[in-house]
Image (cartoon, rainbow, N blue to C red; front, top):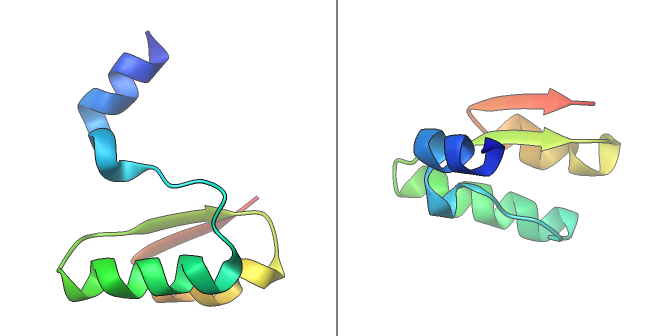
Length: 60
């Protein structure tokens, strides 16, 4: 049920996992160039560049 709600809110292409920090930054830059809105959720300083580049960032 939660997955179905998440898909309804964000769509299929909204989630990416297991990217290294440079890969995350590249992905967010590419999405930004396509005028996509990006939210980055991460757990540490190694992802700070990607979080800063996104439209919204949250560190946990």
